[in-house]
Image (cartoon, rainbow, N blue to C red; front, side, top):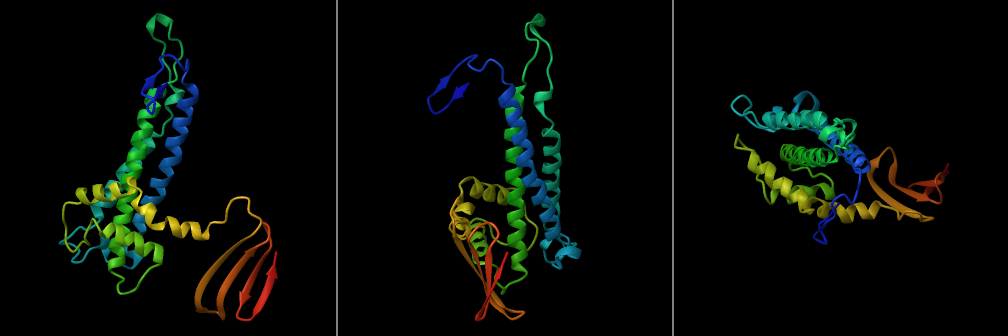
Length: 240
């Protein structure tokens, strides 16, 4: 067992690593799902049939490949993760003249879990780059306040794409933003605004909507799990 904060290692302190091995296997599978979903969103951004934006998010398509290879990179990392998500804890070989009759493969479970996490970080970085590039084609329109703050954080280290360039440095810069919690820092206070404290009896979320279908604003008042109120102009409608 390794205690890095104490600088201490206990040899054989955990006689059999089956439990941590299984947890690490499950961790890899759970984290991988983030990249799997992220890659599908990247596809929707770079595919002009789905996004109605320039193909691969770049001008002068044909002369420039844009985010085509970035998407291939994300897809490759996701496929690599699928192989890495095979559980290490299901494997075992007898060694040492039969004295090691069953092993957990926990070390390998840990190493591949770390690799899965690193791959996921880069896939999400690619999605952030693609999303910010997509926004360039929709200016002067603005997206939501939280997403504009994320856009500004990304643009603080990576400039927009106008023609092909070596993308690896851009991916690494945005990965650093993720690791340093700068992207999370840009949206954390917005998330807290909409988050009701766990176990609280009441919470209020106000969502302002443009005048659409006669609704000026919507107020959800949670008295419990099922009761809420919708307010339209001067009228209130209680619902369950």
